[in-house]
Length: 113
Image (tube, rainbow, N blue to C red):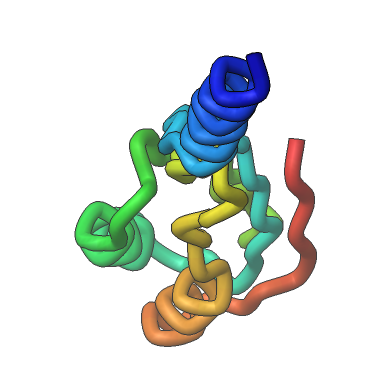
């Protein structure tokens, strides 16, 4: 009787331990809105879009501009892969700010939705 109990106990503990370490992947989608200024010409935005398309995790890029004031918004859809073991492949937002500055634009604000 004790043997059966211990065998069942070890099977239960083995299944429980395995389920805790299983890799449950899902994708978290976030929308990031960057407010930018010093927009002078369309070429700046085209170059920025070209640079952003090379960044891992960005799935969609949109611009909203007010040409008269030289201000606008950069809207990015970001996908992050998350596993059940709390491992997160983080999206590095500092790269976006560097690319904004590289294209002679000025970073003003940042919001996530």
